[in-house]
Length: 320
Image (cartoon, rainbow, N blue to C red; front, side):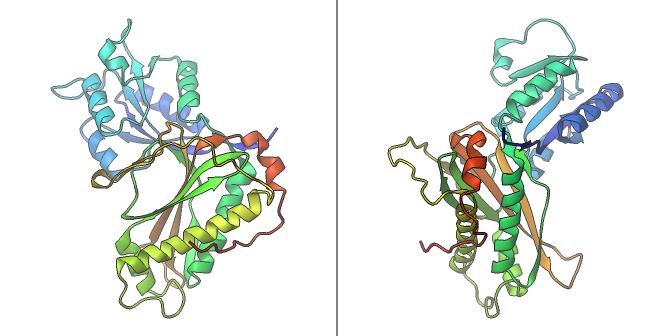
């Protein structure tokens, strides 16, 4: 049995009852959720500020001014339909059929096991081998430090997301194909932050000056390629072959809304990397967000057999 890690996930917590708030905060701590406590008035603003959520915990009797909590849930669903909503019921009976369409996880106040089952079934529906998660962070740090040798590169703790909102304006996507997984890796960042980082000398000597958007695209593309080469060498056996006849799923990108969908409701593995000036603290970091989307095939129980196939740690740069 492959050892798996229980990653954390950010959730929007909309609760007004002090006793229930304490109980839910304790529950979140026990299952690995990071709650963002908000009121009904700033709930939608929180969605705008946080693009990497995994769900919403909402009280049915939450004060919402002229509206009620169910209408707030409907508004949240319209903005971010990929986020599961967990409604704490305060009255008996079934929900109206209209609300059942977007409130898939109602639970009765006090029944934490019912809430736990819903969280496990939706937010934590995929488990990731501990060695894989730790290895991904390690090889990514090595690759980024190679591409940005003059920057301090640090990784935040990995977590899972259900959001499909793109971070920044510059994104790269590269396919990952093996006998135990099929999907994609993404890197995302803000164009202005990447430009400023290069002007500060994060990368090789001479990389800076007049940078157009193609130069920035190429830098993030080469970084992606280096990480992919390291991933392939470390976790995919040389003899691994994947049939070209396997099914594919269309990738939908809406640039106006910074939205991307890989055709799967499964959670995505996410890691944020902060690049700062090596000799200076407190400066605005260059944030690069990495996501792994195993939307086409995921068999983590086979990971241990495949991961030992290569002793190479360095990434090979594949030209494309």
